[in-house]
Length: 224
Image (cartoon, rainbow, N blue to C red; front, side):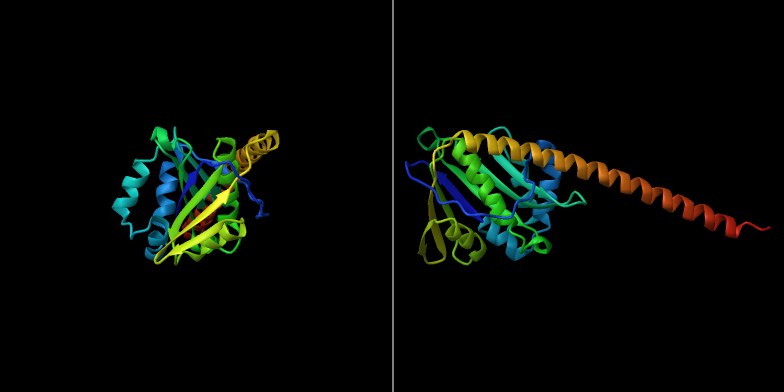
């Protein structure tokens, strides 16, 4: 699922998506990002990148991510598995400084919950706050999931054979959009820390249960 963000003076129609904690990812999450992309099926990799990406290609893609320039967002489950992510790669060209590439992927077992739409809305809000005024999404025509998200957002779709473009106009940033992004990022980071603590706690209990089980087995084998 690929696309571009482009600057123009226009408006944007918002839609309501599933509210789920979405946090910004850093270079410390690179391994989790690679694991997420490797978990995609061959077909999903084709839809995500526009070609059948091998494991080696995914490794190079992750190694080439610029966490200082770009924005990457992720959704985690309670097992700290990165089940959905979006990447906005901003252009280095001065003439296209208001442009950014958009890509999103959701693991098969986590679909049907609105995660793709939530990531899209999160990216739109960040794009507004960065001065982007029109989102341009380029996707394969068979990528109905991405195109449906764009269509429900009020985007104008144009199909050209195997590829499609969608144009979505955005409102300028305001105090509400900036405060909302700050609040949602804080909420997502708090949620992530709680999931980390919960996982550590349950891993500790599981280890203790295994130790106790091993002790009981050892006792049953010990001659009286």
